[in-house]
Length: 470
Ligand code: ARE
Ligand code: CA
Figure: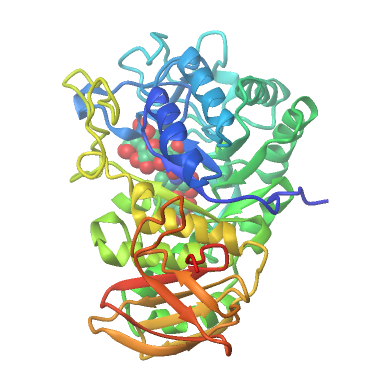
């Protein structure tokens, strides 16, 4: 039977892409715990290649050298400390698990100092542990080519072999023993679904409670491997959702936000309780992973509004991409000349809003994380409204209501909601203080209506638990 994948309390995941372990620990304590984030997706924690000649690109992390927990983000002790400190403030850690392949670039020792060769990783794997194809994947219409050949030339593990399955399970169990609560399965589509299921079963046999599993299966609907092949092993990241929302907000072709509810309701998406969704991810924002029309932090307000939509709309478990600023697609995180990652917190104190973007700290994001938690119990969209293509509003029953004005003109309208009569704090306009004061109050009348004005390229949101003081 399919795994229980999304407990009712499951909330928002933030991908702290390339953040260091000490920074993540502080972020849990100072921002993520207090703001009600559910979990952090961390960059792959295992030993990885070092590629100085390309300026230490971010994708070093996706070429495992060994399963020693020494990476650009920190060492094993720092990882363990971070997991505990995050747990203590109610934030789970999900690790990006690179288990389909091993490192291709063998000119330098790995991040833990291990010397290795393609197809030969001391104490771990030798040539008989790899698939025979040994050619880059070239045909996505052919399931064997996709699962048995080499993703961008990365040595492809023979995941049918018991000793390979055991090594991989041991790695995941080791991470779980530090308190890591879930795994993003990188390149899941390139591992035969029955072999991945067998590996994950070995993990579940040894880890209590079972880790949350979400699998990266890019399924544009036209290839040999289908997302539903992987439902039995856990949740699946739905790539169509972010594309559909992105195309609507970018007004690609004749798409617009006004169509989104209809489009999403009829699209062939992963079932909601099994879906992890995003507006942009680390590949899509830099044209890797097939590219496409995805909205990123570089789109400014359009990105914020797309994120507001995702967080308000009752589908899937949302993941917020937290980026560093970049100009070229290879560029790694802010770093010294020797490739040491510079930090958000001391000693570097780079902070957010510059080299580190920190989308997850934007007031609109934290407000909507709060909105999502407050509306979780009401899974339906109610009172969907649109005006032209770019002005939309919808409710979450008696729990909340959101208006998104993606147009370049001000919107003034009387909205029908299911909210109880009362004075509500508008979530976007200000930080709501602990005393319940709020900058902008919106009064919902006895018929559930309110009249308001929403500026161009902005949004407003109300929920039942954020009421103004009488
Ligand atoms: C790097 C270099 C390559 C070099 C290779 C080996 O860029 O030039 O050949 O190393 O030395 C990331 C980067 C890669 C990088 C790799 C390893 O994106 O550029 O290669 O790390 O360092 C497919 C997969 C999907 C995958 C995307 C990128 O299905 O699983 O490609 N995404 C994950 C991660 C990536 C990561 C890897 C996997 C590898 O999120 O960040 O790669 O661990 C269609 C198909 C998709 C396909 C897409 C692109 O859309 O439907 O399935 O995605 O095309 O080919
Ligand atoms: Ca494979």
